[in-house]
Amino acid sequence: SRWVICGKANNCGEQNSLAEPNELHEVRCCSPFNEGSGWVKRPGCDVWGESNSDGSCYASKTFSQAKTICEGLGVNIRLCRKEELENSCTRGSGCGFDNDLVWSSTEAVPPTKAPSLSPTTSPTASPTQVPLTPNPTTQT
Image (cartoon, rainbow, N blue to C red; front, top):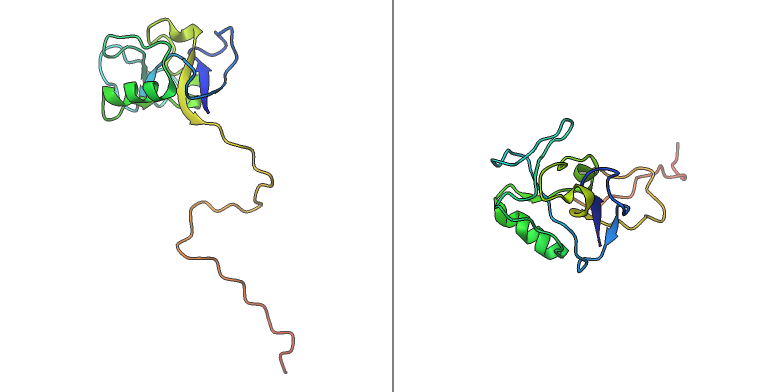
């Protein structure tokens, strides 16, 4: 499942929630660049947002359709992330979707049972070796 987020923070009758891929929700796209007329960049946001860059509004689409729509608009264009939508980065970008739940690219993350006390920041190149311990029978 993926997160669906209100087009403008606290502006929807529904709560932000997880949606199954076949549910129908609205589509807004994000890009790190100004892709042209209609694209908006809000204060505090790192992305530009748009709802109808090709002149069409895309309502009631599945997740797969939403992803395909955004990716088909340009090489740098993608579905917005949960945080970008929560920060209202696409607010006022058209189609009246400020009052609707919009698809995000953010997947549901199942909770971990026991988080690691020392997580790695990147994968290791080779398996971790067992630490060497002093031999208790060392002669002096």
